[in-house]
Structure formats: structure tokens, C-alpha cells
Image: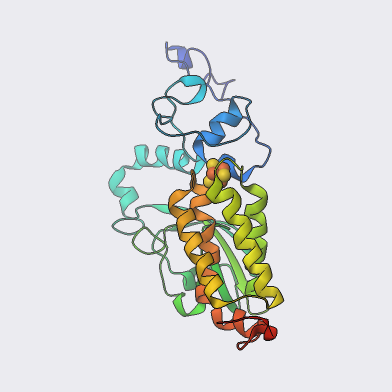
Length: 273
Ligand code: SF4
């Protein structure tokens, strides 16, 4: 585009200049949060900022900054050339257009799919060749785990909103191990700035280890769920606000499997009521 004078100084001989610079991050999950991303771009440790001020006022190097996903920007030329009503023909009333679904896990054809908003989990599973599916994690590690009984639910702001990550688990998967994997990830990825997230994720992981060992009480597990709800409202950024989602949804939706695995009564003789 630079060779064709479509990017850079004086585009197509006009006085309009515009350029793109591509930077690579180092993989920190929290840098998906826009202010942590900006900190990282400025060469600082990737930690979320206090807001306000918001990036749209004070962002990169103190300038007004608009932070968008590439997916969003890629939709813009199609909307400009084909019109908003064309875009709205796809999807649902409140979730217009298409969505990129990044599908991984137990299926024949994992990958990135562009599909209209409003398709059901069942339809997506068929498209990607998933069989004997037990659970679908929507929205990544910090998303919600949907059980088979709810696979007729639809992706969209009316029902299941998502950034697009879909992880498929078939009948061979142990949901307690799935949950442990997610929580280990969050203990590792918490930037440590705020207490609800830094300590909370460790406590939730400890709870999972207790369940695994059969050394817990339902009362304590319920206390941890309450802790998760506190993290959702008290954490500083989206990581800590959403990391308890998997803990709460997997323990709620797969309690029969998880607590059957460790024994329903007495839990190895060590657990109380
Ligand atoms: S919620 Fe977690 S990741 Fe976000 S600022 Fe607090 S400690 Fe850091």
C-alpha cells in the first residue's frame, strides 16, 4: 500500500497522511485490556490503568486513543461500500453482522470461522465436525461453560455474548481438570495489582485442589463462589472480573460429574456438611 501511495505521507497526492505501525506483544493475557495494551506499547509493564481518564481522552502517550479489534476495523470497509442495511441483514436484531469464531478443542476442523450472529451452539458444532460434545466454553478461559442441555442457545447479545473464542470438550474430558487448567492460567496471568484478583484466583485454585483431594465442605465451596462474585465486582479490570466465571459455571453446571468423581458423601471421609 505504501508503494501505491495508499499509506503514508500525502496519500494519492492529497494533503491527507495516514500510516500503520505493527507492534508485537509478548503474550501477556492482561494486555488484551486496552489500558494495559497502551502501557505495553509505551514500553512499560503491561498493567491496567485506573479509569477515568479513559483512553478516548488520555490514551497512548497521553493522546486521545481509539482501541479496536482488527475484526471490527475489517468490517468497516464492507459497511461503507455496501451500506449499513446490507450489514444488518446478517445476524439478529440486537447482534447485527457476522462474527469471527475461533474454534479449538475436540472437533474435526478447528479454526477461525466467520458466521452470522444468532447461530446456535448446535449449528456451530455441526459446522466444525464436533462429536460427543459434553461442554462448550464460550468466551475463552474467562467465559462461560455451557452444558449439552443448553446447546440450542444462540450466540449474540440477546443470549450468549462472546468475543469469539469457543473451546469444545467431548465426553472424554474431566471437567474438574478443565477448571483446574483455567484457574492455573489465571493465577499465572493476574498482573497482581489488585487484591481481589491476585489473592482471589489463588483461593479459587486452592478450592479446586481441595475438591480433587476430597478434602472440602460444601459450605466452603459456597464461600468460594461468593468470593468469585466479589471478585467480579471488586477487581480492577476485566481479567479479575471475569476469571471466576469458569469456576462458578463449571461447578454449577457439572456438579454431578465433579462431586460424583470425588464421592458424594463424606468426601473420602474428610469433608463435613
Ligand atoms: S484484575 Fe487482575 S489483572 Fe486486572 S488489574 Fe487487578 S490484578 Fe491486574
